[in-house]
Each structure stands twice: as structure tokens, then as C-alpha cells.
Amino acid sequence: MSLNCHSYVKVVDGWELNGELFPSPEDHSKSLKSRFSEFCGQRKIKQTFISSQNVALIQYRMPARGTSFSFSVRYIKNLNPCNILLQLDETYTIRNYDRRSNCSISSLFPAGVKILDINVGITPTRERGTQFELGTLHKVRSECQKRGLDDYVQIGGSLGLDNGNMKLADSVCGLNSQPARSAEYIGCETTTVRLVSSGAFDNSVTVSFTRLTENDIDMYMSVICIPEDLPTE
Image (cartoon, rainbow, N blue to C red; front, side):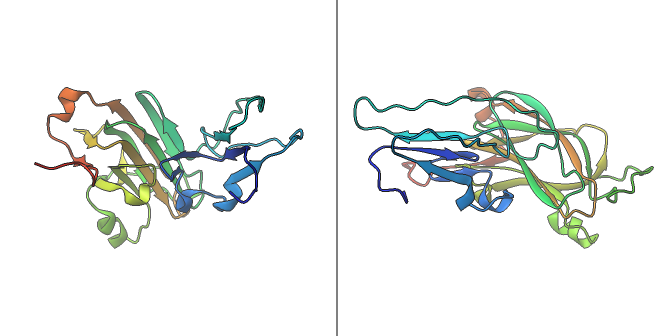
């Protein structure tokens, strides 16, 4: 805390859990410092805070009786969503909207992830025309780069929110309107699909997230995350 206060309120542009942030600092358009706003004392805050994604966090510390704060929330339609934190099983499409960006969909639960449609590294920005489906390249950030591309989709999981620590199940690019034959099963506390875009292509990927049950987790996992402090026999 930079403020010398016993009680405080802090607004976070994103979500924080166990010291890790969503979106990760590398994938956010704002600097890390500008994503935190801290207040204390007796005053009315007239500032409006607009989150950059579908989650924001209010943290507070009020050790003394009689201290309080109030706030209001209004939901704004985001026409160009980038980073999304899921709470339920959902199907979602992420795009780069002709921009150089890194966009992620993350769930705070183990999930099966299936690609339903992908167009990454194929359609040049602002030159949308007829493109031939060449299929999907798998396990291939290197293969995508061999084609001169730095546009790809990562699927994986991690113990926390920072996708810099993500264990990869697959990296894909290409053009394919047919659903993948199988899903990637991510046995981690956080499941993530990350679209990396250079800005040279109009990229999009549609994926489905399905929460894994205990029976699912007992079966084959594409990736599994084991806490370092987990006791071993």
C-alpha cells in the first residue's frame, strides 16, 4: 500500500487471486500501476472506474467499527471484448479486431476445451475475401512461425491466474470451420485459451468450455497441474 491508512478501498482493473492477476500484465493494454486505484479517509469519490474486461475487483480493509463505503455498478456493452473470465460452461468467440493483441478466455475450474471454429494467421487484415480451408496445425507454434506467422492459439492450464505459468496442451493456427474431433482436457485450477495476434491478420477462434467432473478428472488429461506443496507418498 502506498497510502498510510488503517482502512482503505482499492479498485482493481481485472481479477486478483493469490497475488496473480487476470489478465496478466503482459496481456493488458494498461500498465500494472494504472490498474490499481487506492483510497482512504472521509471523502466522496466522484471518479468513475471502467474495467477493461468483464471482471473488476474491489478490495477493502476496515478494522474499526463504524467504517463503511458504498458503490454502484453499471454494466456496459463491450463491442470489442478481449479478455474474458468465465464462471459457467460456455461457448465463446474471441477476435483480435485487426489489432496487435493477446486475448484470453479463462475459467477458474478444470475444463474440457474444444475448438469449434478457427481462422488464425490466414485472412490478412482489411483484405477479407474467399479463403481456402487448409485445416488446423497442431502442437505448432514453431510450425506457424515457419510459415512466417506469429499468430496462434494456445490451450492450457495453470495453478493460478497468470497465464505466463501456463502448461500447454496444444498450440494451433489455420482455417477450419469444422469442430475439432476431440477436446483438450485441462486438469488445472485455471483453464485458458489465449489468442496471440500480430495485427497482420483478422483472427478469430470459437471454443467451448465444459467443466470437468470428478469422473472426468480420473480419466486421461491433456495437462494436469500439481501444486508444489502437495504431499507425496
